[in-house]
Image (cartoon, rainbow over all chains, first blue to last red; front, side):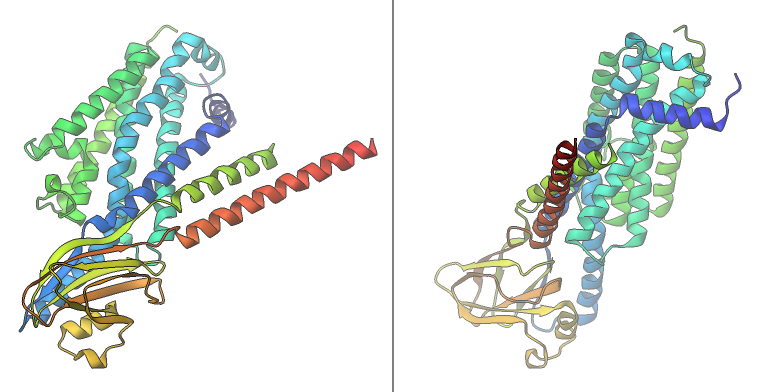
Length: 272
Length: 163
């Protein structure tokens, strides 16, 4: 079916008007701002302290101090991002369930497909908007809280790594839920199975005893946090390198793209 | 429609900031021990002057001083305390609670020491509530929202009169 840019823009506008009324967007952004602020305000429970006994080694302590000052800035970004994971595994399956899976039962999908838009575009648009909304709200939440509570002390390197892994994680969760929605065609199954699967994965597979080949692609955020500051939590206290971060994020990205392609493949062959 | 959305956005954002401005936050919380000739130093960052509470156990005394991050490097390098710019200090105290004027925002170090044997203490440094800048931003945004609302109200009354 021929499709021009105007049709795509119109379908984006249509999708936004149908699925994302104004209060929904504002509520999601507000949730992320509050969670980010709450996380950043909790950083103090991890003390940065030094004991100076007579005849202390000033060079070693100064080095440790410089490291600590940098760590505080990194933690200010890492903490909200770690807490966001719990919000995302609950929010993304719900958004996909109500904006994509429910479209099968309430006739919205049939209406959308009657427009001159490809099926691929419809599906990618629906999951893409969830990824965009959740990821940009999270980024906005972190920036907002950093502006108030850690002004002028943001480590750009840490910020970019953590935000990039956050976007990739959201994409991975959204693409698994998209596949679930397309296969099950049920909002309930998508919401409950999506949330359940990711909550179980988060509580079991994110532990240090899980093999890195499974853990790194599923939880690239943890790898990135561990790379930036290994002392944040006992669960992430392991030596990770930049290669691990790239491997985790890269494989998560490939996995999410593969899941989306599979969803499109199934969606194209469905009778609606 | 656009103005209505701006009004709603401002209202929600203002309320969110008001909520955030009252979230309690601890910068440092520790039970530590220090002995004569030694120092325990804590790094903290504050966007406003923090609320500090120190309690010393078993009727002993401690001294503490607060310096900027730059001065803490100089102190660790061995420079005497007299040559540093002390932002706040107290000597031989058993307990203290208050908001010292540090000229925040900034990164600071609090050093704790004692003149006697091992002394146990509890140190809590919290952000003073409400978070001033967050609260002010929230109030400014809510006032802006209210102004738009009043402007709209007067405009609609005028148009009714004209009819």
